[in-house]
Image 1 (cartoon, one colour):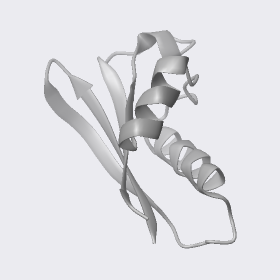
Image 2 (image 1 turned 90 degrees about the vertical axis):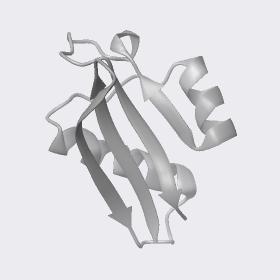
Image 3 (image 1 turned 30 degrees about the vertical axis):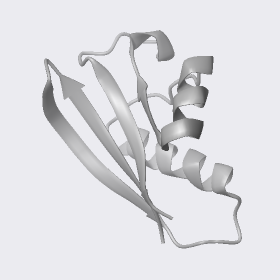
Image 4 (image 1 turned 180 degrees about the horizontal axis):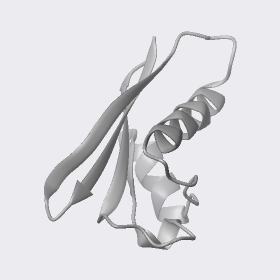
Length: 88
């Protein structure tokens, strides 16, 4: 099962977290990542962040990235949203 962990951090403290799961392996890995991110953003009541080059690079290398204020159109009241693939 594909699982992605989403976490909201503020002042070095974990504020909120959730795990998005997907067992539909007919989808590509990229589609599963975007679907999990959409589910995480919906649960946290956030708009979908913009993938910057640094996010893409980090995610390719570590299966983990952080979305800061630069990735969001509206203002956010936390330091960053972190996503991490924890199971494939």
